[in-house]
Length: 384
Image (cartoon, rainbow, N blue to C red; front, side, top):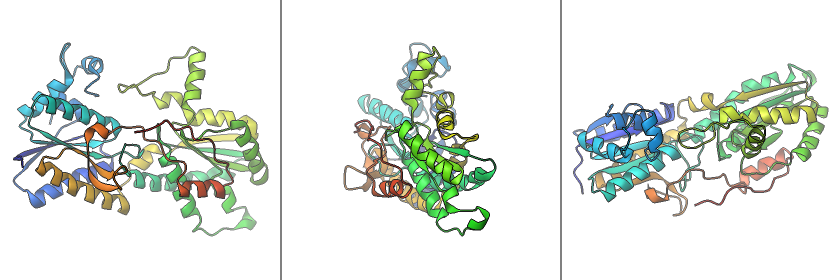
């Protein structure tokens, strides 16, 4: 068993409360069991590591452009040397697929070059899209908070005749959060009482369609179905994933000669593509909507305190992360879908992002049935 004297924590994506809870869980567990171990935290994620200030490391050009390394330097080597200089024995990475796949690259480099350091990651992303992790930290909370967000937004359903409300939910390649948010919203909706004589009905506040990246949408057929809803109750509410329809939108932008901006990881910048507005424009004419409102719950949902379910998940993961760190066992902590959903350190070479939501999931199919939405063709990419 390797000797551990100093532990470093590296996060990415901002101090969202579920991420903060994960940091707190690690500190609490180390303090409880190993109070003599020193803990340091790198400022600004991988940027802080490269600069030694307590970034995709394989994207050399971006690291050079941002002044994180000099021309000709290998960011992985710079990071490894900085960790050695800082006398770090264990590095905990906390974040989504980019954070942990970069950690995987770093772990591989450390192993190949005989750096005596253990990397143990925690999957913190509300998208819930990390292979082979069943449930990432923060996703349950985000679904619940997104539901609360729409409970207020939907109050506008009768502010204008023939109102179309688009609720855009985070999820670049994975529709889990959109589907789970819609399901949680409908679960909460079912507990309310109604005054139908005053026009306050469950039907008007319900979810009428859910569009996610993994499921093909027949826009013409859906428009015909939703127009009947609009004609009957005078409003339509649609939940869409921010990654839904992106390929179609990008093709339209490129055909029009527009540049499609991308980030350092090569991802299309979704705020530039704006799927919610695109779907709103598409359906407004076909439904005869007099007003369209597009509301995005992402930053509201991810900024909420961890709920009880997430706190339990975080506690079990951080406890095991400390055990693995002390034992010198690297990997990303989570319930392994390829190993009977056992909570374990999943090997870094198996970690990848972009895990699609399984549209055959029973609760999702039940929801589609209850809102009378035909299930589209499964168009998810083959996964790991």
